[in-house]
Amino acid sequence: MTTITILGSTGSIGRQTLEVAEHLGYKIKALTAYNNAELLEQQTEIFKPEIAVLGTDPNGQKEITDIAKNSGADIIVTAISGIAGLEPTLAAVKTGKRVALANKEPLVCAGDILMQMAKEFNTEIIPVDSEHSAIFQCINGNFTPCISNDLTKSSLPQGLFNIAKSQVKKIILTASGGPFRGYTKEQLSNVTPEDALIHPNWDMGKKITIDSATLMNKGLELIEAMYLFSISPEQIEVVIHPESIIHSMVEFVDGSTIAQLSNPDMRIPIQYALTYPNRLPGLAKPLDLTALGKLTFEKPNIDLFPCLRLAIEAAKKGTKYCANLNQANEEAVALFLVREIKFLEISEYIEAKLNS
Image (cartoon, rainbow, N blue to C red; front, top):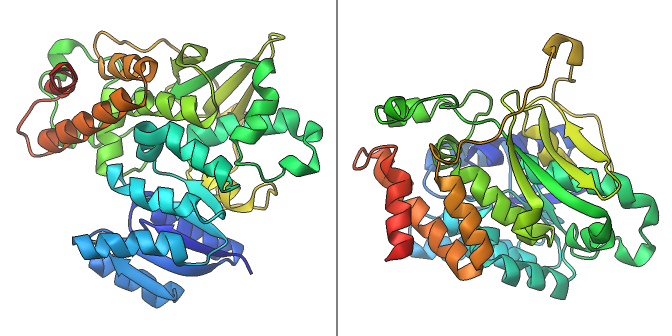
């Protein structure tokens, strides 16, 4: 029986991973959470993990890293929010087990180190972000027949992408546009944290939902894709796609573009990361294109949402600058959530920190 450890089991991704694991009949080896003791206790009673840890203090955080290193699970799902997921993710990669990566900050802050480590320990890194899962599926679907046996476990997806690299022209990252797509600067000046936490398509945690509203989430995903797929930032295009049906696309050198489509349901990329390379019946509602009617696309408004510009600049400057960007963004989001700064001041705060 396949066993999994979930780092960050009480968050949105963690809860949905448990749902998918139960559907698949997988056994839970370990669960960790930051401070939601009540929910972690409920999960422990239901799923009977061998160990469960709450990381509210430094000792608990060390135990989470130890679990990532020593749980013995077949798959380690890293779903800890923010930079707190860096050390546990690095520990998970060192196990040589499959890492289902749902926490983007480790790649944003230490992408070159993480991917080199994955290669060294022969670790599969399978992305859980819907956009990066879509890219992985597009590339994988195009090149699977060409993969030799010795590449079936070579730090995927980067081993796979290296085969395809000469044939990929660019990656197209789609973005919903968040709750404030189409707003004017005047309207943005008055939005509240409550407004920003209402996402039109996805049910996510607070931090990532604010990042979606500022378009910083898409910027962080661009950095993540750059490292994950070993591609330059100039080869990554961001396109606003309000329906969130096409989760990303890959354009090849011959002019063909392959896209991955599904309803906006994180259980799809979660399950793919757990069952890869197999596909099994899932929990998501099938896509009905005739009911949908149309798919629309537009360019992002970087003047109104400068966080995306800051992230693209960071991607071009390298890992250290990306790490500084991430730290400044985490601070700015925290300040916005407690109303110490306004929405439009998030990007100003980040840019000031980067230039200091």
